[in-house]
Image (cartoon, rainbow, N blue to C red):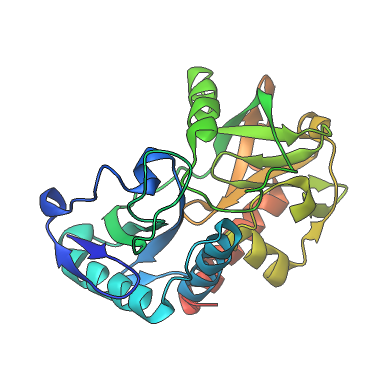
Length: 278
């Protein structure tokens, strides 16, 4: 079951009846924003932080602000409607677009489109693998830091990684600094220090990234792209992966997940279990 409407009103409908116009600007030019979050045992994780970021992304694109109360209600309805088939782990997506518009870059005057959908979540393995890629993030793009529905470059980069047997692609920015993955933030451990690229690198302000900084004192610091091949440990963060240790990047391998990455993974799971909206 999916919630479909606009920023003011909508309803739960079966997935095969959830129709959005082919003239929706989110479809024609990817003019929209979204959030993906984990649902554990019927409870959305860090919903308040996700809704704040949704509002920031919408503002950055110049979209009419989403109504937080409407979105919260829609999230609750979707989780309730899908609970019987979701099991203990779900993946929930909130998509918010500019609504119907002309067939071009100009927007129309239609109300925004809001969709809340949910699917079963898949548990990640204890550790993961990554590939570097030949493309870069543009840290000066007008949509830098926006969780935009324009994800084509991520699709291409992720396929490149998958073709090389990796679960994620890690990208530099135009200054050859470490930036982010296609759907993750990246951390490196160097001489016991836990570092992650600053927002100025062009990376997304990830929710799990934010919590690792807040909870464990990780430091935002410019990191050379080449550090991926020299750091003591590397791990990823995302709303579905939590803290995810890396054991291979390109041809470099680790025998097992690093001790700091493993500890942070365990502590993150424990903290999130007792506070689902930190």
